[in-house]
Amino acid sequence: MSRGILRAIVSIVTGGFLVLTGAIYLSNNSRPSAAEAEGQLAQISTTLELISDNVASNVIHGWQTNRLIRYHGMYYASGVLPNPGEEYFWDRKGVFYRRKHDGSWAVAGHLPSNPYTMLVGPDGRFWAVAPSSYENCHVYRMKHPLDFHSFEEVYNGTCSYLGASVSPEGNFLILHAERSDFQAFNPNAVIAAFYDHETGKWYKSRLVTPEGRYGYEGIILRGRKALAVLNSAIADPKAVPKPPHYSWRHVRLALCEDLTKGEWVNKPWLMPEYGDTFLQDLIAGPDGDAYLAYGYREASSLEELAKTPMRHYIAHIRWDLSVDIYPTGVPAGPTKLLVDSRGDWYLLGRVRAGEPLHLWRLDPKAGFKAVEEYELPGTEKLQGYVLDVLNPVRFGGEGDGDTVHVLSAFYPKGSERVQLWHAYFDLPVKERQE
Image (tube, rainbow, N blue to C red):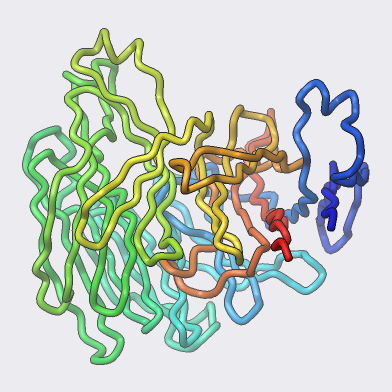
């Protein structure tokens, strides 16, 4: 049976009104058009919804963050409000949005600081990690389920460089730098603060990081067990001569079998003398292992690095911290990993700024090489350097089957009003052969 492909259908929802533009249907049995003969990509119907047209420019920040959740069929987003009188980067209040049935979004509540990462437990109580400066990481949790006016502070850490995750049992883990000192090779540490839902107790442990400060952690939390990917956040004039010398090239892997005991296996993984590492997504695959999408390059000198291109990879990280690495050949960043109801793999990402996102079907049996490519018309509005998608394994809530939801920001030229957008589309799931 032939399965048709929807071509160039874009749905844009603003203020509850739906606008359809340019619908063309092409059957798989049709002869290719002149445009296709020239290499034009098949396009997937995409719906876009404006969440807000007035958020702060730093609303998108950090590969390990999350601003989109689905809980009991309802969608929630978090943002940052502009502050014309701000004195520093974190001097902005947070805002939460709830999606209405007509596709419009309304404000659900506020926070005194930026809800950098939003999570939800199985009981409907949301968590928010919301730093107010570089020297803290306030953690808030609702007192009452789905009550965005009932947040209370439950933990305050020492640095805004962090990562967080929630488990299906309602446990919560935050990793944050012990000190804000970001000079390369000034030994630092990562503090792990674990909340055990069953006992209502917090447990703290410590991971030493000899290369300096780490602070962009992706975490998969299962019960009292956690696997984490740690990215350095240091200033290294030798490796990056141009001020402010920021380098995000080092990556460590860490595993703790019981966070109430806090005994970590903490090992270096990517440690180039010169190079760049851009972590992009971390998911749990159908086999239960962790899969990481990232861009990477390394060299033995600055001269060699200047000639070395950035390449895209997927790493298969097992729970014993062994790793297999696969170069995908996909020219994209940022990217997100997706798996459909059949177990087929996809990669969502941006090839060029100002153009729509692309979707690639990957073949894990062939080293995660791309075997099909699609375009998502209208998604050029998702310009932020991070794309948030539903990831219930890390942030709680639920997925939406084979429908993919994406959140990012749009920055209109000549305007200080940044827009927050939500887009969704269906994966091109292939029918099983009888």
